[in-house]
Every structure is written in C-alpha cells, then in structure tokens.
Image (cartoon, rainbow, N blue to C red; front, side, top):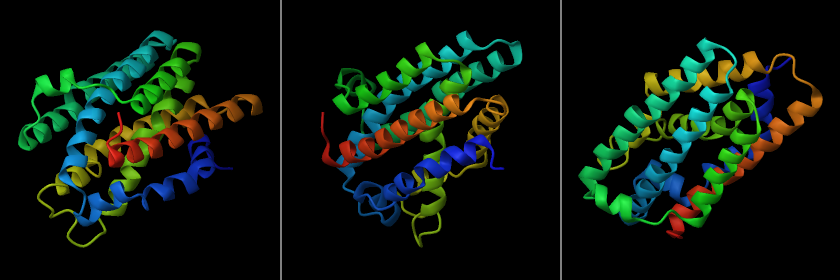
Amino acid sequence: MLKLADRLYKSVEDIWNSYLEHPFVKGLADGTLDIEKFKFYMVQDYRYLLEYAKVFSLGVVKSRDEELMRKFALMVKETLDGEMDIHKSYMKRLGITHEEVENSKTSLMNQSYTSYMLDVAFKGDALDILVAVLSCAWSYQVIGENHIKVPGAIENETYGEWIEGYTSDDYKANTQEIIDLVNKLGENITEEKEAYLKEVFVNCSRFEYAFWDMSYKMEI
C-alpha cells in the first residue's frame, strides 16, 4: 500500500503537471521569462516565506514531543536563514532593496494562500501543518528536477541559480524530512482524516498554481 505522502501526491498529480505548462514556470526553464515578472515574483515570494515560517512555528506549539518540536523549530530556521537568504542574494543582484520589499503590498492571492495555511495550522494538529506546507516544498523540487533536464537551463545567468537551489541536496533533504514526517504521523489515520488532508493538499496545490499565475500577470 502506498504511504500517505504518495497517496496525497496521486490526488494532485494533474495539478502539478499543469505547473510545468504555465508560461511563468516554462519561462524559468527556457530563460524567456520577463525579468520584471521575476522581480515581482521574488518580492511576493519573500513576503510569502515570512508567513510560511509562521506556519512552521505553529508546529512547535502543536507538537506533543520534544523531538518533533525541534524538527519544526529547525524548519523555521531553514526558512528564515536558508531559503530567504537565497532570496536576499538574488534580490540584491536584481536591484530589489529591503525597503522595496517591506513597502510592497502583499497580493490578494498571496495573502489568501498564506491565510489558508495559517487557518489550517491554527485549527489542526502537527500532521495538518505538515500537509499544508508540503505542496509548496515538494512541488518546487519537482519543478526544479524537471527544469534541470532542459538543455541550457542550469547555465542561464538569471534563472539557473533558482533551478539549482530547488534541486540542491540540502533542499531535497529538507523536503524529504517533511515527507517522512507526514508518512510517520499519518500511518494509522482514519479515512475521514485522510479525506481532510487530501482536501488541504489539493487546495494548497491549487493556490500554488494561482501563485504562478499571479506572478506572471503581476497582479496585486
């Protein structure tokens, strides 16, 4: 029998495949993405990650044992001091200042997505939280692994680093940590619980598509 994470993946496989056909995502691979759209995305994604870290923080609150608390605390640190540091480096090269990020508005779609994850986290347990964040972490790895196969993608001076970041050993290890925890905590859940988790996973995956679309259209 498939483990929970694999069953969740089966429920969104078509949605995730649609990411690869979106013009923003395709533009990252072939290098044709308008740089202004990428700058818009970087600012919105940075603001997204600030809220994403808060979702992990609620995992510390909802954890029942010390080891799981430590894992969630590390996920907060890896988001704030790892993934966001990559964004800072990128934004510096793109001429995006910290003041610009702070003074930018969070798009309505972005706010809707993070508010949904936080709502799931506040109402749910540690497993609910992990499933809420998994679609972002895992689908980015899937996109990166697809793009790294595209000739010339990794060598692109603008977008190659983005692709490389989401296919790095560290990133894949962090994603696998979440997958392993989902499988461990989801071993003996009820059918009702699994149905709810699939709903959360599908909703977050739909939000991921909407995030790419929002970035391409530069919609606030």
